[in-house]
Each structure stands twice: as C-alpha cells, then as structure tokens.
Length: 325
Ligand SMILES: Nc1ncnc2c1ncn2[C@@H]1O[C@H](COP(=O)(O)OP(=O)(O)OP(=O)(O)O)[C@@H](O)[C@H]1O
Ligand SMILES: [Mg+2]
Picture 1 (cartoon, rainbow, N blue to C red):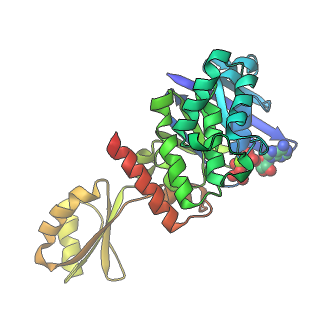
Picture 2 (picture 1 turned 120 degrees about the vertical axis):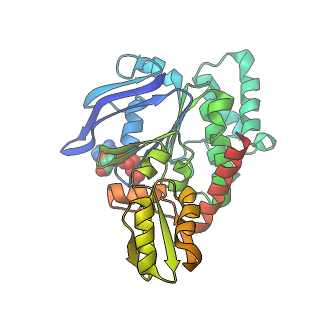
Picture 3 (picture 1 turned 180 degrees about the horizontal axis):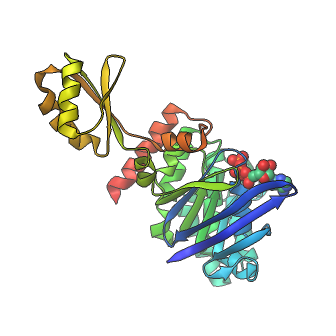
C-alpha cells in the first residue's frame, strides 16, 4: 500500500521551475531515497509533502490525506529532520523532546515513556539532561531523529540527515535509520548526497533539474547500466577473444592489453570463462556498477563529496545490517 502519492507535481518560483511534473509513490514500511545534485528540487519537494509550501499544480497525499485539503492531518502523520538543524540549543535533549511532545498534543501520561524510549533508541539516554549546545553534530542529528519519532508518525522525512558528519557518526546514525521501518513502523523518505547510503533504500528516484530521470530499486538501476564488467588478461588475447565470443555469444572488447565484456551475472560467468580460455588466463577482475555510476550516467555529474574511507565505513554498517536481517 502506498503511504505517499505524488501526481504531476510542479512548483514554480517566478520563472524557475524547481519541480517539474513529477509523479511517484512510496510503499508503506519502506525506505525511499530521493537523490539529485544541488538545486535539483529535493528540499522543495519535501517542503510541499510536509505542507510547508503550496504546489503550483499537482496532487500530493500522505497516509491518505491530501496535503492541500487536510494539512493538519498530514502534519500529524509525518516527522521531519530538516536539512539544517532546528533544535533549541539552550534546552536539554529531554526538554527539546518534551517541547515537541507538547506541540503535538501527545497524551500527558505517555510523554515520559515515549521520550525515554526514543532517547534509548538513539543512544542518548545518558545525555538527556545535557544542553544541546554541547552536543556533537552526530548527537544533534540523532536527537533530531528521536524528536521526529515522538508523535509516532507514519512517515519520517530525513533531508540530508548525515551531511557534514564525520564517517564514524554517519555510520552510527545509519545503524538507527535502517532499523526504523521495523522497530517504529515508519516509512522513510530521505535525501542524501552519499550514494553508498542510498544502497539501503528499497526504492530510489533520481531527480535532476526538477524532473525524475530514473527510478527503481538500487539493483534495477545498476542493472540498467548493462550489468557487471569482467576484465580478463590472457597469454593470447586474440585467441581468447574468439573463444569467449563463441561461448557466450557476446562482443568482447580490448583495452590496455585487457579483454572486457559486460554481462548480467558476472560472478557466475567467471568459472565458465576461465574454463573456456584454459591455462592462458593471467588475471580476471570483476567490476560491479555502483549507484554512483548510475548517477553519473543519468545526470552527467558526480554527486558531491565522495570520500573513500567514509564509504567503506557506511558499507560495513549496511553489510552488518543485512547480515542481521
Ligand atoms: N523560496 C525559494 N525562492 C526561489 N527559489 C527557490 C526557493 N527555494 C528553492 N529555490 C530554487 O529551487 C531550486 C531547487 O532548490 P532545492 O532547495 O529544492 O534543491 P535541493 O535539491 O534540495 O538542493 P541541495 O542538494 O543543494 O539541498 C534551486 O534552484 C533553488 O534556488
Ligand atoms: Mg536540499
């Protein structure tokens, strides 16, 4: 069942078309990634979905409520972690959450338990009486996620939740985010500039200049590039090329003394490939397309700030999560 429905949404700012006739749906209990370069229209879309901005045209509904006709119901159904932090730095962590609970009319008898549960969930319970102004960037982000959950929303919007955080804090925050759909029965709508983070999404839409230019699961998007590339070096490339082309019925190319071919299941092909070429094989390597390759192909741009070491840390966190489920 779809918890978010967007139909032909457009937003103009004067002459500028920030969001250009986009449509998509997000299934309940999933993580949806909305990716795009700077100025693509991500925050504008989120602001419309969160009822902070009126669309120029189109229809948007959340949890069955129309964002224009029933904004109050929509607001109760969502939680938001904004791109820029919005905590009150002169209040403690606990007081920030308390303030939020009052704003959302959470039942008095439930407030204490909900706040304590949320603080435990993001690992900040021991720091609950500290002023937010002495929190690190990662702690502030975790507190914002906790705050977004206090009124038990159906959808949680995370706009660049990890931007500016060090690799350790990013990995740490991800451990909480990936648990949210199951533990808190919430659907996640997130934007990020870190492509390796987008790997955890069930579905992704790539937006560029206001338009959705690709959508699907991370696997589908990567497959759309044509599959894995196998590189193979042999003692006799000319002969090996003929043998491989005959066996797999595909074109094999050569670059820098190395043969290469594109195939859907690269790892499964390698044993047959080696058998075909025999002892003439000198080396074989497999290159899997990444979401970064997808993004580059679709938008012609690198998504900003790729950082090798942080990618490794996030990948490890994602792998650990997958092992657990
Ligand atoms: N209130 C506004 N008035 C005029 N133009 C705006 C307004 N808000 C956004 N824009 C413009 O709309 C376009 C989309 O901006 P938006 O903030 O949605 O991009 P974004 O995808 O979130 O980018 P980033 O990755 O940098 O956060 C940009 O060209 C921006 O300058
Ligand atoms: Mg933005």
